[in-house]
Image (cartoon, rainbow over all chains, first blue to last red; front, side, top):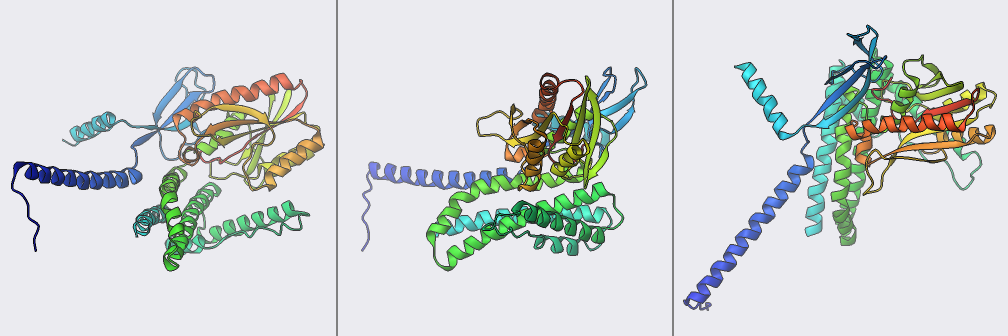
Length: 112
Length: 331
């Protein structure tokens, strides 16, 4: 009781074709599932920016957020008119892969 | 079978989010020097629910709802003060909000798990199929909640803070006077108009009680108020651009009812038109740390409010402006 398989070239090509399709489907299915699970919980790298400006509007400072910063906090004195510099905005910007790589290279060069 | 496995996988993902948020809160509490962080978190996760007041007898329903919400908040904050002694009011508010986020995530997880187990128990494939189809969207909507906890700890303004940010832009560093719990007002003069700016007391994470603040100011002014303007973040429809400003009538405030009705009642009592300025954003953007796009819309909203004050009121008028939203990271 066994299935007889013709050994002609057409049958062999057909079997090879179906096996290839099967492997492709399994691989793409697994890849899709892994990508989906990874991207759902993956955090996009970002940095928080603090914008502070002089109350007389003649000086603006942009720097990275430091813990303790808040909008309305007096953040030093203006180098131009000696008035208070007040934090006006705090927001998050996405960091591009290029920027992250540059930062890592910089950090590594500092270590060496 | 396929639905059951799919739901189980997604539920595990939601459970991971809950654990992640609880761990974040725990590490924050440890950083504050609280040794019994587990007891604090466990004490909050399952407690502090509010039962809706009886609605078949609507008399005084708002008063009853307000009473229950205020009592629950007071109880929560007093218990927290006991658990987390010696921290500033702002830090306490930050702890309260992050615990509330973790608790909300845990509740969603419990409800989803309930329906999953119910579907399995009674072999209700329709229920499981509904969950299977619903969960991908829910997971995407829950992820920002976990990310929001980091922002609250660090004191970074979130999307919902646009209202208080516009209020700050108007009030600047003028003195903040307490008017209700976690609610302040500032008095400024804009070309002869007395503008009373109400907002939640920052820079801690709180939404305050702006409705009661507006009501008390109106009472203080013997209800001689020419206009009331509310500014708040509003959910955009898919396809709309983040940071779009829109103007309408009514009270722009998304509370369960007591604060909103307070503003509406005051407006009616004063005979004052009620303007609403909204800044549109997605539900995830409203709870995540503020994006540049939203931060840039603050100037436009400020100009819109200024325009309303200058064109629709006269010098000598009293105007109340309420910046509605969470004041995390905003003075």
